[in-house]
Length: 137
Image (cartoon, rainbow, N blue to C red):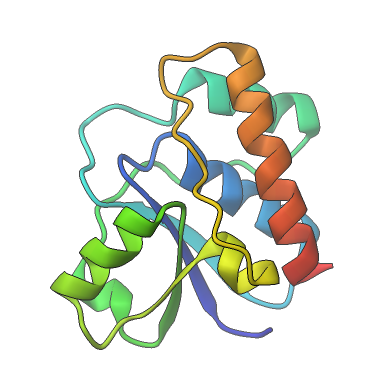
């Protein structure tokens, strides 16, 4: 796979930056970044950064809003079916897929760990490594 891949979640502080970091660490064949649908001024979540540091992953870019120019020529991999529906309503031409479905045909929403325990962040990381490992290893 040699394309621009954008991982998308709600705030671009937990799931999508973690997916970006892991993908950049395990694969050199594509360009990876992440975006959010409702980004605030907060940085990447400390729970996410703890995993990035503990696992020795490539650091993610800071949170950024999904923009029209991101959509053209990119594959958007989203964390939930709601994200997929929202993007399709805003950008009907977008090439957008639920990450789990793109990876292995399942329809699994990856739950937002924000405000959760370290275990919640680890559970999200485990899901992401499972799906991304199928795509990029």
